[in-house]
Image 1: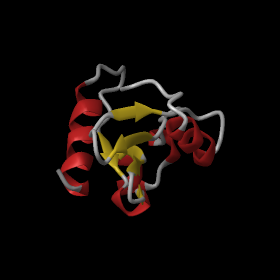
Image 2: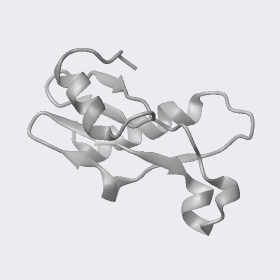
Image 3: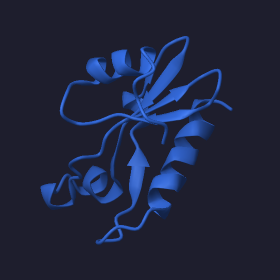
Image 4: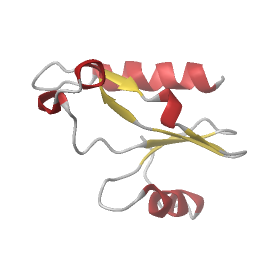
Length: 97
């Protein structure tokens, strides 16, 4: 599975989750972090990305880390910068998504 397939898989899963405003989410492919071992996918409301209107801006949308070997997905958080959560992932401290 390549980067694009994983991004599509993440979009599909997030968009299936129930939410109050029926917001469609897209993975920000240009912002994806890729290393030899993992991807970090960021996402945002499709409507915000199309309009720039902050009324549609998502908050609390924690990035998803995908292990390239196992394809396991891990949820991060929003209280710290992404480097903190990458270290947590490397140390086996993040929960699977």
